[in-house]
Length: 321
Image (cartoon, rainbow, N blue to C red):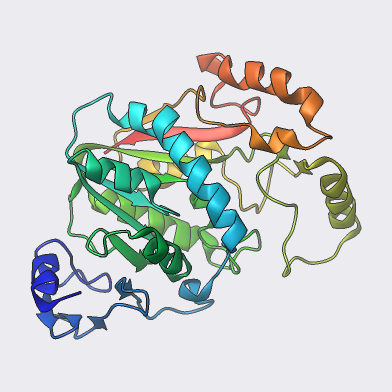
């Protein structure tokens, strides 16, 4: 990035550590309040690293090359068939994708003339560089420490992210203070959303006993008999059968509502329909393929009054600030 481009960013960004004003200093941005400075990584995207305790989320790398290619295709399908129609349902100008992955939605919104930004961890920067993503609209940062001023966006969406917030490795093992980290995440999304703006949050529903998007454990999970049985079932069927209570990286509707509304102060909470959200690619597995049509019919026709219950496999909520 050139000096002039850094100057332009100073009007759009703030220090994620203290929300102080940023100024351009040669090839980096410096905070005039706390002295923190932020520079582009080797791929050309600014990394907004903030000192923190515990596991360094900036070092997590959970996206291998082959998964990124799949995510690019699936991310565009999800955006075109679900996310874009939902956010277009009410007027908006500015959008933030928190956990944007390959950033297909952000790029499409930019092409359509919207003021759109995508943030994700530094491991995504190499993929952005290959795809030619604009460094003035894609940034590397922690989802709980956003580099944007208060009330910057009409729409904020964060899909398939919240269940990884507060995890040690980016997968399912949770930090001791995961509830605090998740509240920080909710508060940050609310902070950068304008009054009356909307936030879209999604993850598998903790109260539904089967998750086909995540494995039953990660490298840091404690070995138990139940864990081994769950791992065996998952390896044979692709279905992660999990407890619907207690400490869990998945969240329920009530837990998300508590984060954003009860504690965060948001005034509206709506359980969204799932029609068009899934591509059902997981059901290409031989063990799940016979269930494809049943699963599609069930998910896309679930009555509205059952969306917040344990009969809904997915937590998909639209929150109004």
